[in-house]
Image (cartoon, rainbow, N blue to C red; front, side):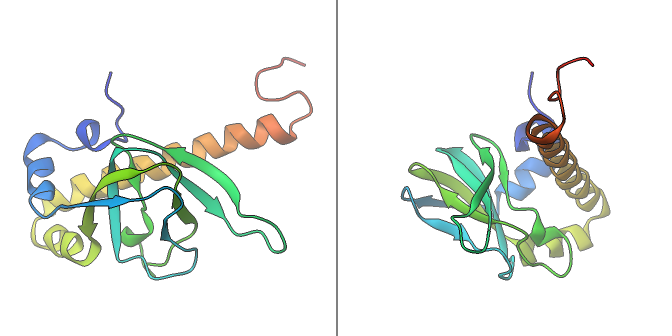
Length: 152
């Protein structure tokens, strides 16, 4: 079953093809930073191979790893919502090959074509909802009295 948060599972083929026409192939070495928390979110990526972690700045400590992303997953959703600033940081944990998209160009296509724009908005919304859900489960595992799976 294909996840509704991956590009292949989220977008109908005509919208996926339209998006892919403006994709640029990029690669990152292990340890490369894709973006930093608070910086301008002007692009996003779909991972082809490798692993990217999302992390959060913690004063006086190493960044806290929030999530690990792999094949077919969206890296970055802050480009879709004003004020277009990254809420987290991202780092390649292994060599990564990805498709890179210019956020302004994608937003312009969304503005020109309501059907495409809605498909993109639903996809990005599904990614955000899925990641919030997974964060909630991790928080329950860490901080709930009996974890997320133990009955009282």
